[in-house]
Image 1 (cartoon, one colour):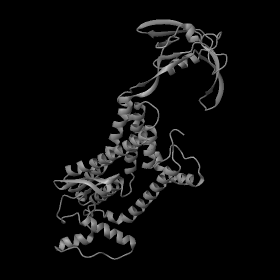
Image 2 (image 1 turned 90 degrees about the vertical axis):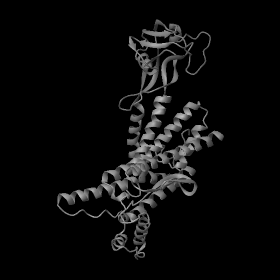
Image 3 (image 1 turned 120 degrees about the vertical axis):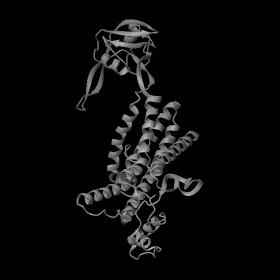
Image 4 (image 1 turned 90 degrees about the horizontal axis):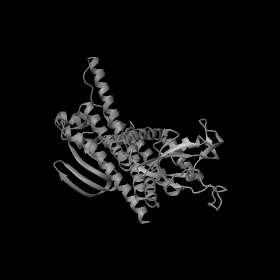
Length: 437
């Protein structure tokens, strides 16, 4: 139980670090471009700790499931605020209207509070398009960089479990029936008869050099009943041996996915399992491949969440490759930490899981809908296109896009996200995905 809790805590801390890095990705370019940043917060809810440095308050909140930075002028000032500023007066009262109109007005009022005046140049909306895009891309890109770092640690620092060409065990005999123990009178295994010993490193089979156990096994399986030369390295000494593989029948899957009984050769050895460190570029390659896989899940997210909800009603088994909430990810991390496996194995799996979560944050935040980063990027790019079109047509510079008008759509997106998150959390509690059945 303690190991399970440790696994959950490690994942939560890792997620908090991921969120902190995401917000740093926004904070650094925002300050570099001169935007006033009032707050940098990791988490939501009550503030646990904060400290003000210069004009920015840095802090940690109680619920580590998100974060934000508060930039001045995320949206242009409302028409009322612009008119009041032009006349040197104060902003008048709230506009009337229905539910969504009130939401728009509230958003404009909250935004206007972050502005010191119409002549304040240290605001987000007055930056050139490319600077606004850099600020909003900074957060997701930090998650991608962190994911690449984690994948590099796993693949190039820890390594990938591989069955090497070092012999682990040698069967002393060929039992009369599969699964039986060796009995007196049983013939020796081909490997034992050839003099192969535990610890030997298989260098080549039938003249073909091999670098791992799979390559050696493939060559041996292809010559059942035939004498084949094998070269091994035994403590630095090269030995040339000859072995005749036994013929056994195995089910083999062909290129078309069809299963057929095939006769293959076996000699009665197993390979040593070791962590083999991969080239340094393996981490970035794996992260990019994972981006494609996660993007495919995100595209199908509404369908996947619907299928998850259906599994709650029917009790059907969930898709192991389907979406998870943070509750499900934490449960898997705890499950991994509690397994009876070497510590390095458990660390590698948890780091891989955290890398996948960062890739999910990268992809998800690029969806071009507010309040996600991709929504702000889309607004900036659309404003840039409008300005460019006005210039080539010789017209005056258009007013900045009033993104507060998108608040109703933002509201719908937020409600949808809350609903999907709720479904996934309930599913992860009632019908969880388990790595170990």
